[in-house]
Length: 334
Image 1 (cartoon, rainbow, N blue to C red):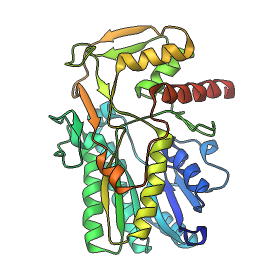
Image 2: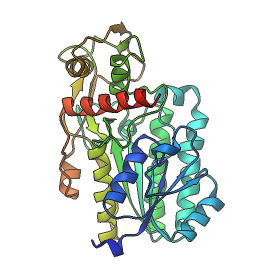
Image 3: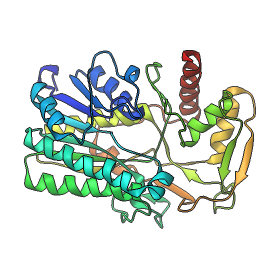
Image 4: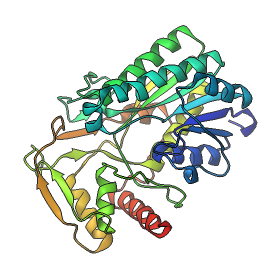
């Protein structure tokens, strides 16, 4: 695809963790980019210099409509939303508002504005507690918390909207995203993050005094939970390739797992962080968290078949090393 044919892309949540990486990946690939972010959890400094930034809320259909018209937006990458599973249980209506209601407003503005392509940041939480270790796109979607349900409802809206209107979509279901931009341009910066690798590198750099291990009695090789960790840079490269496929095949839509197809346990992750720092993080055992499956790993055959995507940073030590480098950079920023 030549650069002159690349549509302008609206990135919602482009000041956040994954969204800021996607902005860099899109710009690197020659797409014009406009970011809309309300900066509730994102950071203005995280938005790449080459992107146009608009501070605002995606639930504001009039604002989004103006952005679409003024910048001739041809595609949307939708990352904005709330992502903390326990919070979704304690405050479900926040998640149905942020993740479902505002997505509905965004999809409506996209259709009204003639946007042709939509990439949605979905999640493996749509599967709930699957009874298989390697989860495919055909595995039943039975989410067990409001976060997963809020995301699945948005997938349903996109499916129905694409059937009724001139728009196609890609729903990308993430497994456990970690790491940071290999060039050090952006990384996970949210205060109070709950993702294991982020927590572990914070502990390794002195920001936390320990790491809690929730459950040591799972039916796994070492008793701790096993997850499929995907490097954020591999993930956003998949987004760019997914968008290119939507543009090339405007009648097609798809849902794809984004993972490596293999997992690492909590203890294996902590061991990797210890190797990277040559010190030992304090580990504190804690009871299982309700709703946490023992193992959840992607079957990624479909994404490998659908897109010309091949992982480039699918090594646990590489993921940890990039996350650690970014954490140290944050410390230097103060």
